[in-house]
Image (cartoon, rainbow over all chains, first blue to last red; front, side):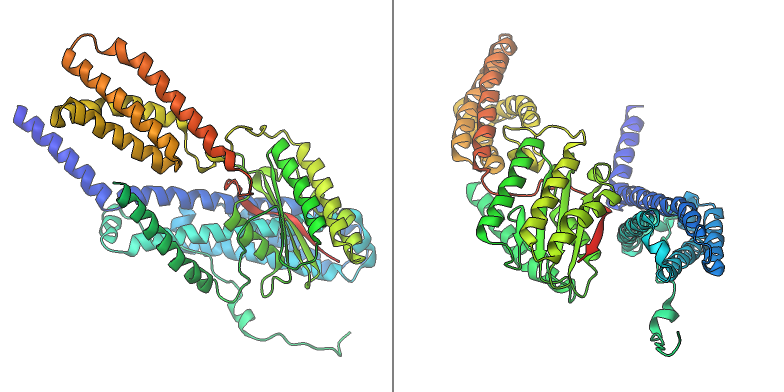
Length: 200
Length: 307
């Protein structure tokens, strides 16, 4: 009786030691950290998505504005917000890259809109539009910071998952390497831009 | 014991010294982040000594009255980085703002790039939304910078920012010893720790070494701990005395049996905590220079502008 109780106690203590020695607690800590970093990323993307209707409404006031650009922004926003993001998205590389692609599309549609708006002096002078520009710029900055922090946390988590002996713990408990952000338009960046001064 | 801790400090210093250039190298060809020494960090020589001191005095007075830390950094250029990326990096490394409050603000001027940025910590994003930051740049900074009046622009910006931050309901600064507590060290925790640890350690030491030497050893350990935490010899000496008496009384209590607890708790703890609090007051007296509170978290908020 007493011996078996003693044995149980020893086993429990040993198991505790083993688990903490194999980085089990580190996995828990970093897993939570990546989740909160990810929430911050989502939070900032949501902030941008909330800003878009205001921008669209202001730009619509400009009668002659390029409809094509505007439509693209509206479509990209609809697409980006239609993707359901769950915590499982983090462990699913395919869903993650789909989400990332949708947000990237919205980002480039918005920056295209901002570039085009330079051609409309009335719009540029519109105080409401200028305010929205500042807010959009701040939001994009926040997205960059949030993404950077997510990238760093995931890096830490992935290094832990792959290094010995924690990879054994990861195997036993089914922890997988988490997907990270990448540059979306790799091909676009690696080809130099064509500058044509003749086109007006 | 003394020697060991000194050695560890030396080793830590050496490691840090070896690591710093490595970190700079790892950052690639970007502009380095200067060491934070004042509210006004002029790396361009734009401001005269008098202008700098006036601004410094204004921001120091504001920090003392409201607690929020406002730092202005003037650099020649932030190339190859964008000013927002550079300001973010500086903010991440300086962490301006009180611990636990995080109310810091960073204003970066890249003189040759003709760009300026106000970077707010998350705690001040409510007091200074991006639009308000942009307005400060548009109304206070840009018009004066265009005329080459850098000191005037920064001074007007400081006034507007101070007014904005004052509108926010931030916790009042702790006047006594706020600087020494910035490292997150709690005196009450230590007092509680000693209250439990010293009697136990004292009894064990008394059992092993005998009452006199055991008490002395305990007192010595307490003294060394105090010296490490406060780096003040007076506090350490006081702690040795208190610790020794404490342990001595505790061991008498242990050997003498029943008359233990009532005797030493009240007197011993009272004098002990008196010693600690005086130590905290003493080490806060050297708060002449400026240092970051270390609590600021920059999330990318703020606004940029140019002139």
